[in-house]
Length: 124
Image 1 (cartoon, rainbow, N blue to C red):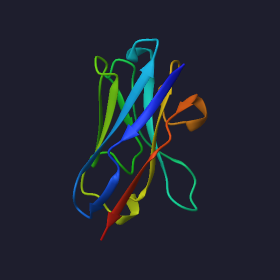
Image 2: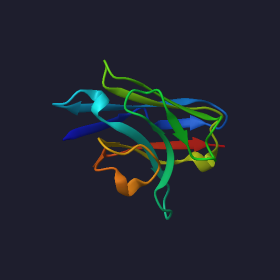
Image 3: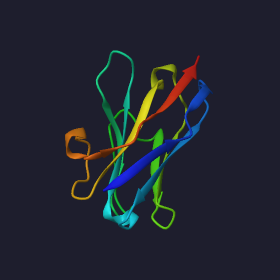
């Protein structure tokens, strides 16, 4: 069982950068879990953004975000970061991190633990 806490959302100007963090709290070491980031805008379905493997050696991005977003982790700090560059108003959404002990990829159905989300709003 793992609990996830997203931080770092807020208001950002278009073209700027923002880094979100996902802190994991678990009786198990952080490298027990692969972590994914997803987002959901009002009236839209939850969308996969990026994922990072248990050790952090592999990353996976939805095509829309590769090159503009990056994902990293520090298992000693039990934290995963999502750095978002060149933000656009259409990046406005609630961003969620999710964890899985068995799955690394972009299918939200495979992640059993979710954080509460953090709101990102990008102004033009």
